[in-house]
Each structure stands twice: as C-alpha cells, then as structure tokens.
Length: 259
Image (cartoon, rainbow, N blue to C red; front, side, top):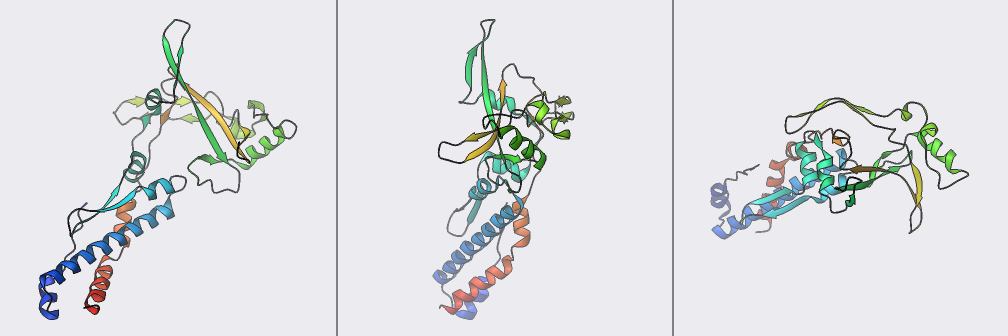
C-alpha cells in the first residue's frame, strides 16, 4: 500500500525562506516520523488483539526506507501474513511430510514411510496462555482430572475414562473447502484431544502439561486439516487510527522552531 503525504513545501519555503536543502531535510523528518507513528500503532493493534502469536507478529513488522523520502513498513514471514490477510483451510499433513524433523521407517511391505510426533503444550487454568508454545488453556475440569491421576503417580497420563463429560468426546470437524477448491469431508478425531495428557518435568526445573499426537504417511488424509485463519487486517486498522495529519503538523512545527 502506498500512502502519499502531501506537504505544500512551496508555501512553507516562501513564508519561512527555506532553501532546497531545508525542504529536503523537512521531508526526511516527516517521512521518518510518519513511518514510526504508523509502525507503533500497528504494533499496538497487534498487542491488543493477538494472543499466542503476538510476539512473532510484532517482531515481524520491519521498518525500512526506499530512497530519501520513502519509508517502508513490511510484515515478514508466512504466519504473520496469514494472520494479517487470512488463510483458507489447508492440509497440514503436506507440510509435515516435508519437515526435516520427520523420521523415516520401513513398513512391513518393504516400502519406506515417515512419521512425526507433534507436541501440544497447555497452560494451566487462570493463565492467559499467551506464550506461542501453548496450544491453549486447560479447562478447569480437565485440570482437576489431571491432578487426580497424578496424585499417586506423577508420571500417569489421562486415559479416556479419566476425562470428564463433554471433554471426553472426540471433536468433529465439518466438511470444509480447501484453498485449492477441493472439499475435505467431515472428520471426527479418533479420541479426545486431552487423551494422553500428562505433566512433564523440564530439565531446567518446573513442569509443563503436554500431550503428543503422531502423524505419518498412513494417517487419514482428513486428520490434519487446518480450518483456516481469519484475516485480522491490523495494518488497515492502524492506518485508520493513527492521526497522520497531526504527526506531520508536529514535525513541521518542531522543524521550523529549530531553524
């Protein structure tokens, strides 16, 4: 997006007897301050609206310059841009198949296959769960169940019969259209997302609540469909909120007072 800033440098030059070098310096100052103001508001929008992806998104807003009077603000990285612009549903299994962390195995039929173990870490109830490592915050009843099974055996994990009520029911994803136009049919998980949940001690101290799910070339083609990301349009919100006329006016006033 190009955001032109109009300044009547002719009138300013005539009124305050500015030479071309003064006008150029003023334009540079306006460019720098306008870019900074927009970037600050953009980060403020992200700070207010995002959760676990907040830090990555904010750190992906990069300020730069193209030429003397053109400032740039760029959002870099695939995930931040998916958050900003939205993303249609897609099959995560394709990405896992190309991961450098996947393990290669030989199947019984002699063919080579692969698998990848995916960790899901949960924050305890009462936590904001805003760290990027968290998949979510544990429901209170699930946390109580986990505390119960680990009272006698700290290494115990939640079995299907330990998970309370509605949380024991495997999730169902409705039929959804993928980005390539194809349809992924309705799919129900084989078990609750909380099955196998356990408390894992960290080598550096403390612990984390974690479960593991395995994906492989034999996994159901519909088992790892991401349902998409809603566009946040934080850049547009920032541009609507920032008072650019006031920023430009303040820069001009400061510049003229320092002459």
